[in-house]
Length: 145
Image (cartoon, rainbow, N blue to C red):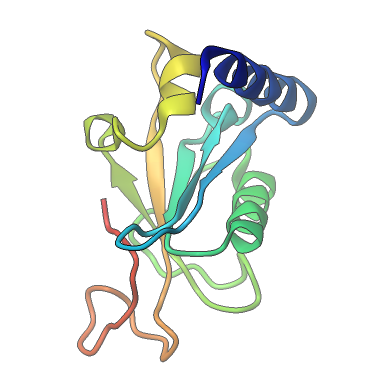
């Protein structure tokens, strides 16, 4: 990505944050690489941690970020508990993730927040048989940060 493309991209990020309160960035899947998506702006505008999701397609990731923001904005997000109803397809968990672990992943947030504080949670979802990563027989390409 050249400088002009980066400037255009970050202008879009800032426009989305101004308009909607957050931006969702999605990094596409390629061979040997698990796709992921993450929010920027939620912490600042809705007083809840940013969200990162690994291993789901773009549309589903965007829906989950939107549902998360709508459900928990200005409230408390339950951590390390099975959540039913964030989306009607499957339950999820939210787990804390240290920002230092995400430095190669959440570049839009790093640039946006600059030296200001922000926090991240990871949304954890089950495999196709309903098993979560900490359960026996879990099989899915979800990077756990």
